[in-house]
Length: 215
Length: 269
Image: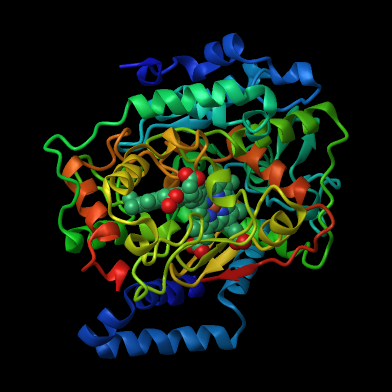
């Protein structure tokens, strides 16, 4: 695997120091590069492992470190690094092993509804949900939906169902950061939140013409 | 205490809602009746406020003294208006402290209480209920007062900067930071509105409304509990109660809220 997979140890300070100009040099007093020792000490004394939410969750990979300073991530100077992060995430996407894109939309709807999984109060081995309705409108019948992401109602009609659309949607669910380095959408496939089968079921929810999303 | 007896069945009734109503109609109806009774005397948060006041004024701990001489930043014994200026730097501890961490300091120094038990207790235990009640009382004494948090001292500015960095710090299985959910105005998770906490407007409405009584949970939550549960949703490990991580985030939100009027105790879904 590429660089992306190598978790940068100790809060990715090394990556930041090597790759980007420290924020402190720009006169700002808060970002990575400013007061690193105290920030590190604060994280160390400020958290404790609870259940499956262990302390290594505080270790950032290169994408997370880059996106933790939004002003810098969006700046012109960071364009090349942003492109590199997107390319690394793109290269990490695993496409469906049997070449089939669509599973069962009924299962997909259940997954989209479920916000469960991976919190300090969930159990190891619990089936994770996709959290999709937390951020997106999907089936028009579901009125309780979030707005952090765009509406995906009628998605098959808007996006189409050709090979290109299939790749685009699979890629977004697997690793949204391949398209937008600092997307707010979790990398469900790359981070192992959802299995290949679950992603197929969600693909069907979005792109199967019989799915409630497309009625 | 009376309010605890009322609030426990209330929590069950509201959390399980219709299911309980069908399965145990009598019991549930009775609980809802108790809820109505409780509301007649004021909002449930106000019951916590008065029990907090009781705890504040009652001699306790190995030294058997009350917390009334506690210095919340405006001088020993001054509670009125103090919450609106917290977090702030305290010389005696050489630390920036929020209301809840300051109460721990006073319990330790004035009353001789070993506060580790209070830090480590889970939310919902009697220890944490007491701290929530005291914080509710203190915040209520700032109702209508404008938030006025100072960043004049280097340690205060430093705490704000650390809080800002924590606010944008992504990690964990979902790549979330506080900013993922609270970074932009007008966003929702399901039907719950998400205040943009880096702005004056968003921080102003959010910061000033906690501690708050959560009707869905039937519990009184201080800001420490609020932050703890958001870290859970963020898929992070658990923040240590009253640690600098939690105080830095509070400093960030409170200073962003400067000028907004305190409206505590709040009441939430």
